[in-house]
Length: 107
Image 1: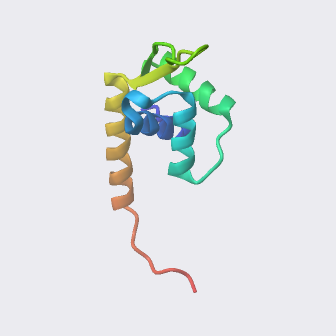
Image 2 (image 1 turned 135 degrees about the vertical axis):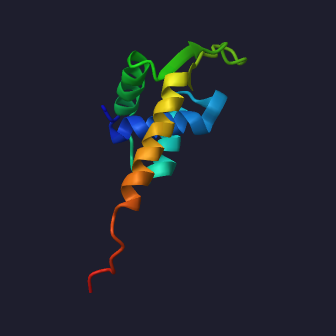
Image 3 (image 1 turned 180 degrees about the horizontal axis):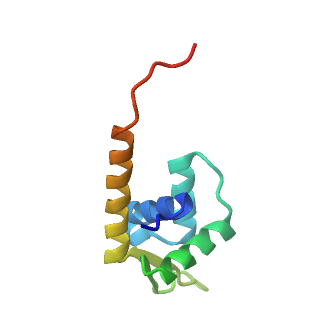
């Protein structure tokens, strides 16, 4: 069983959360909100490309923005494989955490 990296997992979660608004800048902002960490644009786009190659994400270009010189955005969406992988990761993590003994905090 090959697990996704943490950045891949969080990126899939961000895309799922954002739905039809899942484009680069929005994904980066969502990752920042979810993790309270800074995410470089390059790292986000490398991860998005890697997930597309793994068939976990699909993408399409949106229509250009209605203002003059408006650009298209690449909108990402989970594929069935990506959704299945997120569900599998959740199951694996929940099972792993159930096996961790409950201990008191060290003083």
